Image (cartoon, rainbow, N blue to C red; front, side, top):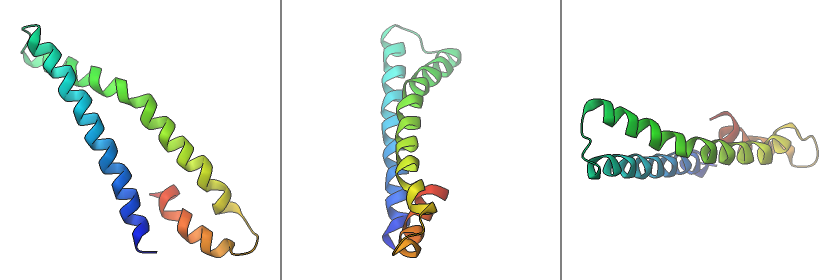
Length: 91
């Protein structure tokens, strides 16, 4: 039971690392083109973030779609699965 919050934190950390890589890449492309103003930085942040919105949203949707049936189930051992799924669905 104690590992569930760590699993959720792991997924969040993975998302954070990946988005930082995309942000860094977008900024490096701007720097290579000779653009280094504050407006260019903001544009690079927007570009890098937009590239990760859909994959992150789809990952979260799949996690929620897989765990919602466990949350609303009423069969054998449903009390245990609800406790396991609750932190992942509710954060």
